[in-house]
Length: 237
Image 1 (cartoon, one colour):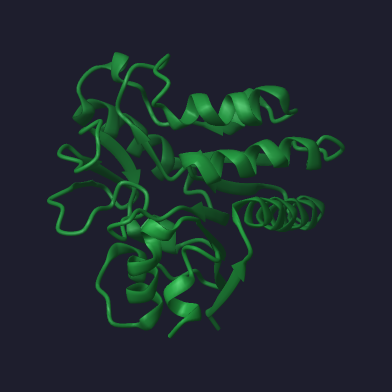
Image 2 (image 1 turned 45 degrees about the vertical axis):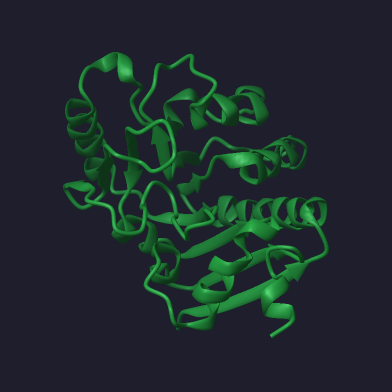
């Protein structure tokens, strides 16, 4: 049965330490018992810091069976500092022993139109149909997750991929996993830090919101790791 777990940590540093330890422990357990392990990662400051911490915690693991996906990506050039892929590679992936063929990045803008890129990636992910063991999610001030924004007229490409052409945050063009794909995960962990997100947190966890973050539900556990600033309106309520 699906369960929602909310944990409020003192600050971002404690949140990152806790999240990286939990992810490392889950990877170790799943890698020991499964033929494949699929992890979908998030970008952003906190997400990238967690990946950097994972770099040290996974050095001694056999990562041959680990597959990496992204929850979303900015549709920019492959060398752009705005790409989540580039940040994740620098923080963890390029220094890891994860096989190159197991790293499944969204296409960059050099391949053609965003529609062509989405179609190509959709064929790949629908062929593999990854059973996500864990999805890491951030949340925006407006309650968005991945590149799924409130009130957006995004375009679905199959069951797994979504095109966002008018993101309220630049860059405007993005590719994202669908809500259906995210909710297919066995476990989901939210990483949320900062007072600017306290309103959205209060709405989402208060159960009175239709924001994208409120629609997330893993098959097993949906865990919210929140720092005290992001959780301030929960603490005081």
